Figure 1 (cartoon, one colour):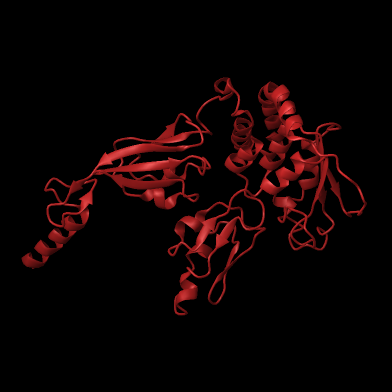
Figure 2 (figure 1 turned 135 degrees about the horizontal axis):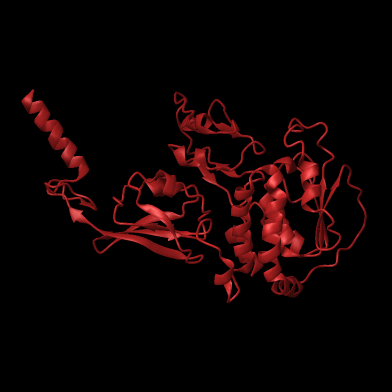
Amino acid sequence: MFKDVLVKTLLGNDFKEKIHFNAQKCLRNNNFKDKCTKCKDICPEKAIENLNSSVKIDEILCTGCGYCVTECYSRSLSMKSNFYAKAYLGIFNSVESTYSCLKKPGDYGINGCFRLMDYKFLSAYKATGVDHNLILDLSECDDCMYKNLNEDFEKDIEKIFLNSENGPRVTLVNEIKVEDTTDSPVSRREFLEVFKNKGTVVKDNFLNDFVEQFEFLNEGETYRDDLNRVVYALLKSRDDIEKYIDSNEYIFTPSINQNCTMCRMCINLCPNGALKIETVNGESSILLDSSKCSFCGLCIEKCGDNAITKGVFKGFDVFTIHTKGVQKCKLCRSKVTKLNANGLCDTCFIRERNRKTKINL
């Protein structure tokens, strides 16, 4: 059960390789004359650097927003997923785990910068109720070029886990002492029993209290968004799940109305590849794989026809969210979903207009 939770709903984007780069597809690599800088120009965090025949992504500065993925002409950039999976598996199967940043030699499981850690990771960890001590090694911070990032990180951690003597805990250390210790594993049955008994507490008490703690960041609504997703993930196997979902504001299934022209804008923009079009028996359908959807709302925001809205969440599955019949253009005989009054597709309409313009000249 909890493996499905990790794969489908831990939507964080804090660790190394949030964006995967395929050098073979990059225009800069295929043609030395090509000086494409689209990904670098659009990156809001200035995390991308153009090299002679490639690009370099700073894994720490990168927030995984996906803008570069949607704008790349050659599709050489793609989203990585499951940034927290390895860390969570360690948490669920031991009473203590130690992690360090990507600059620390050795296999520590997490290879990102703690100072840019998304707080939804910590909120989900605290919501589980598992008796576990998460040790973060900060020994590399003093000499790090990113040491000025999030200077209040230690204070934030202390406030989040204030008075956490039992259950989930976080310990910050400046030096790791290697000792021969054997962890007592937390069995899957024990974890599920803890969750089963504390499910109501997680939703009714933890959510509101935790968001109030985040008010000092002045982003209460943002973190309520994240927490709703996590809490839904933890409770989604319950039979009475409906009473735990407040609305479809943060967890939703996109709904498409008849204004849709099948322009493919939403499909091309989706950073996770959750949308696609299939044509069967003269009908074109837009399919949604909600297990890939991160509820970012980019398709809703960018739809030029205002055809996409937030609908009631239907679960983690593949759904047909819109279907439209296809027609044949009178000139090219291509099957399209939209014809003008003269029975022409957009391409043939433009060609006819240009041809008449030349004749009149």
